[in-house]
Length: 349
Ligand SMILES: *[C@@H]1O[C@H](CO)[C@@H](O)[C@H](O)[C@H]1NC(C)=O
Ligand SMILES: *[C@@H]1O[C@H](CO)[C@@H](O)[C@H](O)[C@H]1NC(C)=O
Ligand SMILES: *[C@@H]1O[C@H](CO)[C@@H](O)[C@H](O)[C@H]1NC(C)=O
Ligand SMILES: *[C@@H]1O[C@H](CO)[C@@H](O)[C@H](O)[C@H]1NC(C)=O
Image 1 (cartoon, protein in one colour):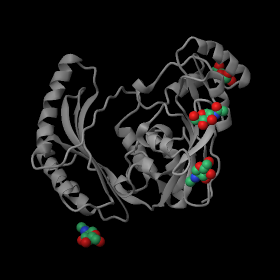
Image 2 (cartoon, protein in one colour):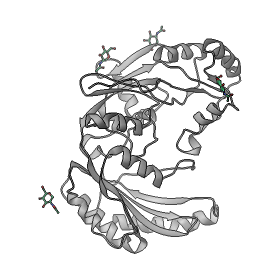
Image 3 (cartoon, rainbow, N blue to C red):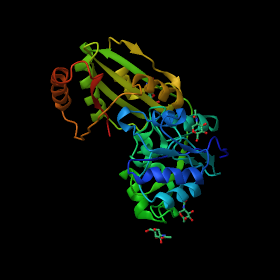
Image 4 (tube, helix red, strand yellow):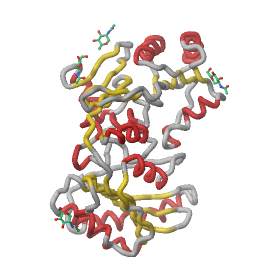
């Protein structure tokens, strides 16, 4: 596969301790014109590029190295408190592996691979970054077929705390490699991921929203789907949502059938449910689907998630659903009009 450098900007944000102000001055002399201070509009843009408000920090300064060597130089000079890699570096090799800078966004990766009729196992939301997604595990449109995003990494280039640049992979620093696959941050700064890519043409998918009256049918369709034969091309996220502002309950399925063509196969039990409020199902590609899901779940919100895994059995989803139904009235009481939405979401594994 051929690829080329799209951009090569990585940002490191320095947080909190008072010595960083001296460090920021030192970095400014090392990287003239590339250290951003609060009040600078590029500083503000970098901070607000994080998807959720609670991920955004107020660093003393942000430095923008353009290579692993520069990251190593920065780590050596500050030796602590690095957060937040941003923006992207994308280049390729000739064997279906995509090398991508840690700060790239998934939408850029999808657009980059689309003309090659390939895809990487990435985020369902467009402007989620590579680094946090892959080191955090990463559920994708393609997970039923290819596993988590972190299962599709061959190598990570990592700057260690002492400034050494290493490769973490199956044969080199293999324990670190394993820890980084789902262990998220604080093991080092991953500056580059070498991702496995897979052949992929356009596929069927989209979102269907149903009114509250469909809830019981939705729950039994999900149970039947999960108890039925496993189909590695079927991906579904079933979400029950309460929108605080409108005080309305509804449900949405994000559905994808990643085999080429139009056959929705065992997802038909969801597409058949009526009535529907919105139905965006179509043949398209990952960049388009990811942009749509982002529009349904806008940036600039505070968000908190918790997750539990359990075996499916008759009635268990109804029990979870009925417990969740109680929650919005409690939340409305505790923080009136301050929350946007409360969801419970089922995701097969
Ligand atoms: C922001 O900081 C950068 C780096 O020092 C500088 O090049 C740029 O001119 C600044 N922008 C503004 C709007 O001050
Ligand atoms: C940096 O840390 C690694 C991992 O602990 C170690 O193997 C390496 O020798 C260290 N390098 C230097 C220059 O200290
Ligand atoms: C693993 O790391 C070693 C040491 O840097 C390197 O020679 C090798 O090419 C890497 N393997 C992969 C799959 O990138
Ligand atoms: C979908 O494709 C499968 C396998 O090709 C076929 O058995 C099935 O009848 C098709 N279903 C519909 C509704 O077209």
